[in-house]
Length: 163
Ligand code: ZN
Image (cartoon, rainbow, N blue to C red; front, top):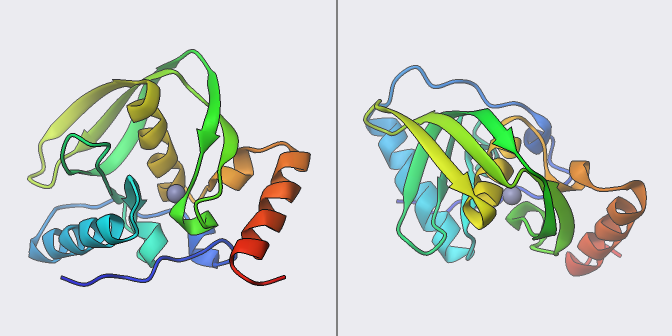
């Protein structure tokens, strides 16, 4: 297993949509194991393949009840809206208020190719939407108002020692 370096805001790979995975194989299993290791080492609650520079639709997350990995996720139902602070390893974990659906249904595949319908709400729903955004080439900064976005970018630069 490998601990990857996490791509940061400014890296174009975070803005590119990931490609659908046709079938899982040994290579994908190894990638997922390394993504999990990278996520735990960070530490973070979720990690999408884009964040380590790989444009495949796969992500891992663990909100405290064990490691989950899904590929080709798609939101098929959504309701409600809630704004809460959220952070991202690619944006130096700074906390910004992000609006998300409160409840979602996601269709995704596990690594063994089984299709799952995941029903999630609250925090879990937030993590899933965050990771699905990554796979679509979106990051939390894209979901902020212009003012919040500018402030977040400044904070990011300060944290990264770029200012
Ligand atoms: Zn993120």
